Length: 320
Image (tube, rainbow, N blue to C red; front, side, top):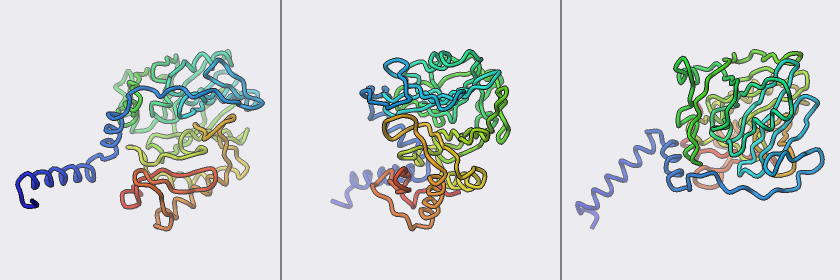
């Protein structure tokens, strides 16, 4: 009966759980629950597919696409998230932007493409971008307070909240940091430079690289074809919008956007300036309550034919 003591205890327990989910770190609670219910291992490899002209297989796992004479996309099309990392080569050194999950050693691929010393820079600290067990001689990180606070003077390791490796059983790496990079400053590679942009939204530590001479931006997980993740522990809808508006002002309208994941084969994930504009417009409509989502958690919100946004229901979204 409703008034019985066991029923009251059950209701009280449900209320406590609901309060914890609402007011504690509910996103990390969901991550830990999903990882507990999952396999705790990387997913099985996908079958290899036809990657079309201009794409070469490095082995049975990695693909390489030559974007220009000194820029390469390195793809992992058999990994479930279909990651893409970018090797940007100057006259004096090369920059590897992202490193995948470390299912295979991307460093060997990068070294096969250049004899220049390679510096690794992650677009953000999620486990599918940092290489995990892959070792690098030189590692650069953006000079952000949320990253610096994890640096003990000798080494850096991302927190569980930044890394999320429990999804697939990856332990957070421990790095010796070679270089701290200032936001909005140029990274000199020798005869070539790229600008480091702070682009939070997907995470609060996300950065992108803008190559003004070649008119391309490497956008990491901020923008790529498919479903953008805006419901993770360090995601923010407000940051997504606050990033889109200055990017629209700064980037030329014919810019090429290379993302860190793709929705389908073949080749490198590419978007255009209009996709960025459409994302901004969708975010404004979503914030105002005029854009309806589908599903329960996360909900799927339409952006355009190339993009959707995965986010919490409107009443739980973070716009601060």
